[in-house]
Length: 426
Picture 1 (cartoon, one colour):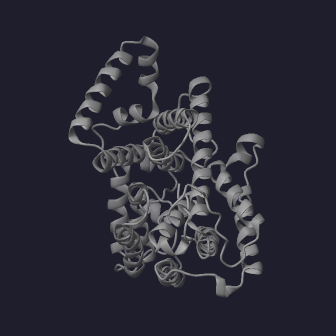
Picture 2: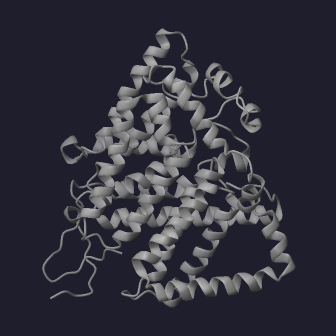
Picture 3: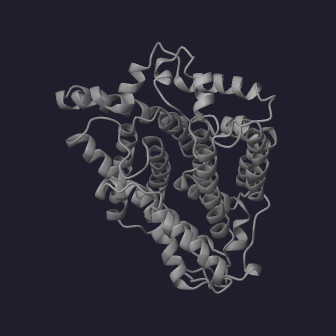
C-alpha cells in the first residue's frame, strides 16, 4: 500500500554529495553568464559558469568510473555533426578562405559545451535530482527577469538581457521558466502551501513581463505557441473562451491608465514589431543570402562559423538591399538548422534534425512521465528558438536540451519504487 512517505533513493554509482551541490550551483549560474561584465566591467571568456562547468567535467572524468557513465546513442549524433562539419572547414582551409579565428573560437566553445553535456548527461542521476536542477535554473532565471524589469523601468527603456549575453538568450530562459511556473500553479494533487502558490504566481508574472522587455520576437512566437499547447493539454474550449474574454477586459481596463499606456509605448517587443512593419525581416535576408553562399560551395558547406567571415559577409550581405545588414560587419544566421546546413554540410544537418526528432519521439512514447506535456512544451520552445536564433554556443540552452533529453530517455529506469513507499516525482 502506497504511503505519503518520501523515499530517498540511493544514487547509482555512489556519486559524492558535493557533486550534486556543484551541479546545482552551475544551474544557478547559467542565467548569470555575463555577470562579471555587469558588476566589474570584466569581459573575459573565463566566466564563472564556464570555469565551473569545466571543473565539473574534469571532476566527473577523474572520480566517476567509465563503466558508470551511460552515453546515449542519440547524443552521439551531435559528435557526428561536429566531425562531419570539419570536412567543409578543411576544404575552406585548402582554398584559403577559412577565417581561422572564428573557426577556432567556435570549435573550442562547442567542444567544451558538448563535452560537459555528455559528461553530466551520462551520470546516473535519478529523476528527483534532474527536477531539482531544473527548479534551480528556473528560479534564478526569474531573478534575472526581475533585474531586467528594474533596469527597464528605472535605467534604460531599451531591450534588456539582464546578466545574460543577449536578449534572445535571456528570452529563451524566461520562456522555459514561464512554462515551469505555469505548471507549478496548475498542480492540484499535492499539499503545497498557499504561500508557495502565491510565490509561483508572482514569479510567473515577473517572468512574463521579462519576456516583453527582452524585445525578442522569437520569444513572442514561442510564448504564443506555449500558451496554445498549455490550453490544449489542460483546458476545455469553454474555459479557454472565458479566459480570453477576461484577458480582453483586464487589458482594456489597464489601457485606460496613462502610466500603463506610456510603458506600453516603449515596451521593446511591441516597439520592434511596429518599427519592422513594411520591411523585409533581416533574418529572411540572412537565410536567402546564406543559401546563395552555400550553393556557391557546391552544397558542401562554408565551414564552421564561416558565414560571418568578413570576405563572405561583404560578398553576400553587404551587397543586399537590407540597410540594417549592410551596416553590420558580420552576423550569424540566426537559425541553428540553416547554420548547420550552410556551414557544416548536409550530413550534419540530417544528424542534427534526427537528434531533435528522436527526443520528440521519445517524449511522445514515454507516457509514464509525470507532467509530460510540460516537457513537450519546453521541447517545442527549443525547436522554435533553434529556428530563429543561433544557440550552439549558449550553455544555458544546452543545459535545457540536456534536461529534456534525459527525461525523454526511459525515465522509469531512473526511479526505483520500493514496496510500500512512494517516490515523490515533483
